[in-house]
Image (cartoon, rainbow, N blue to C red):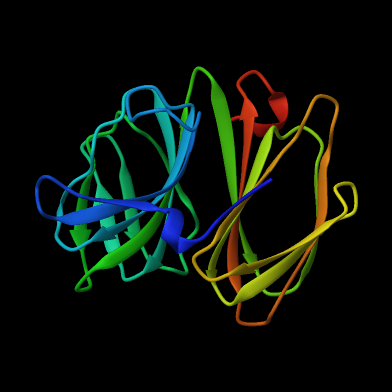
Length: 203
């Protein structure tokens, strides 16, 4: 189990000056943008412009604050707001973001298509029984509010605050199973990764 707070993250300004990316977690831990299996980050977008190109990468994006429209010659992804469904797309798409607010904060999940698949789920404030028999890694990101995770198998209780990230890693033959409780105003994202070829989580 790993628990990251905001002090652990790494922020990097974009070369075009249109925003910055904060890397929350990357796997393997010593990977780079050229060879990661999966990566989770947030982005502060301050100006309209093109999205970065990531060949061979499947992406999921959720807008946390603000609003923007994503479009390309190949696909119209539409307007994205904090209430929109999760947006999934291939990293090869030449996307353009048009901001409809002063800035946008979004959550980005990426996995290398040949190696891993991922699934992202939004969780509102209530009690959740999470059972992930086929996930290799499960991560919880707390956007706002707070949450408490209880894993009977690992005999641990962990508290998550806004901006924090928690990862549970399944060992050989293990099943990721835990209880999650949070306040009525809490918002979290559950992110699951499984090795490619697992039929339960096709990207």
